[in-house]
Length: 105
Image (cartoon, rainbow, N blue to C red; front, side, top):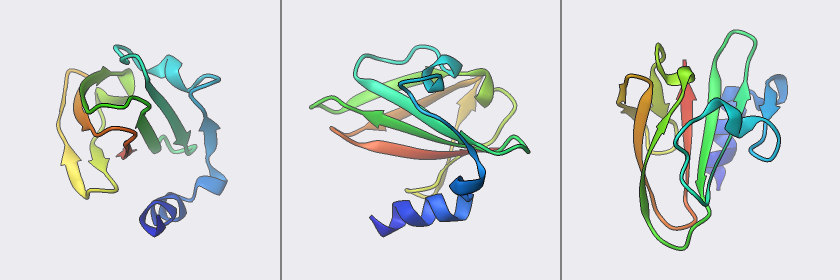
């Protein structure tokens, strides 16, 4: 959608390093449920755009932990709200075949 392209443009993904789930993207995250994948873009200044995708046919509630979340603020760039973090963990609800676009600063 145009919202997604706007998120990528605002984050300036063309100037960021890409960490896809099928290479090293998943290694930064713990407690990732089956059929959930995580990739992210990272700028040199430490900002990240994390994409969490549900490859399952059903809705799921997930708790994902990462050192990336421990001292950062997390913002849902698509739904436009802050995401609560606690001890490096975030809770997300993902609809079937849904994804979240999280800005981590």
